[in-house]
Length: 87
Image 1 (cartoon, rainbow, N blue to C red):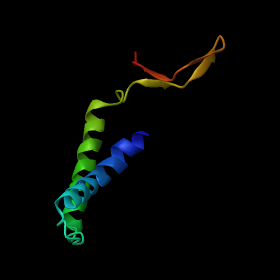
Image 2 (cartoon, helix red, strand yellow):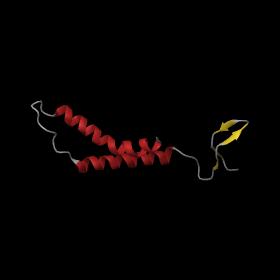
Image 3 (cartoon, helix red, strand yellow):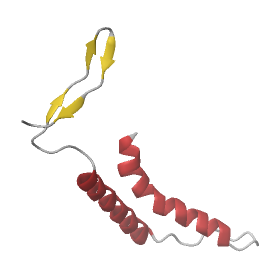
Image 4 (cartoon, rainbow, N blue to C red):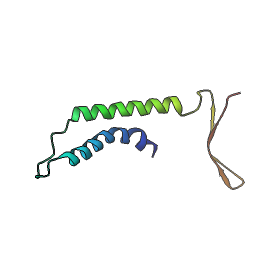
């Protein structure tokens, strides 16, 4: 699910917004869709992808020195994996 929000959504969102915009503004006389500006849509998608990856890198995650402890079973209960600060 994380990959969807970090990669697919930023790449597809500009195209979806443009298609919705074009459908709302197309002539009522049955005219076709206007030519799609693929270069601008692709550039906007790559820009959104870069912004989302930068935000994840700056905001999320643990410090490089932290130690990851994987999930384990304790008294029949699953204890989630987590990071412990380095001593």
